[in-house]
Length: 208
Image (cartoon, rainbow, N blue to C red; front, side):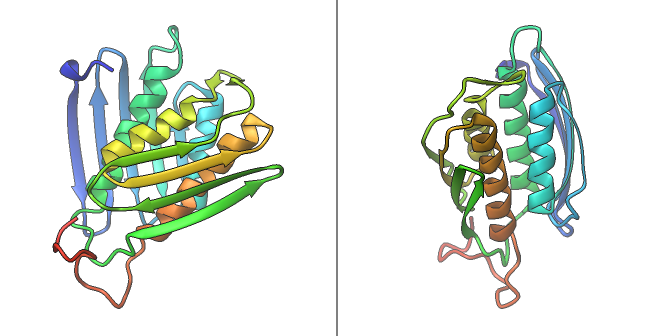
């Protein structure tokens, strides 16, 4: 990532938990729009077919409305595209949630896909921390490097400023990665819900 060449413009409406972010570096140009309280609609174009499918799956199972457009240096490999989309999507969630008043905050979900299962536990904490256990059974899924799923989750975690623990197991990398994206989506959907019993920030510090 070429952080010193980054330019970014953002627009967020924390009343309806929507955000639009554009980010440009020497390696990628990315535009993302996100509605946390959506219908699962997605329009994705990353240049990596399997990654498009995973982000569409993420939106569908999290009930997020999501658009992602990325022009990346895919002539080199998929690393910068996947990493930088994780960064921008993480920032999008962080900004869309605003002061996080009333959110559930914690959630965990295990999702199976045939022989594979993934588990994700999150705390929307304001303290970025990432833990991952497991591995992917094949190194490549089409043009997508399997381990970039872990790196995407790491980049997302650091820039959404959450705590995330994830694990995967199985024998088919496609199933393992897809279960991970579905589990992340379902967990974030639950953790970002507004608890009608609460109108403050769920922390004794008064802020997240």
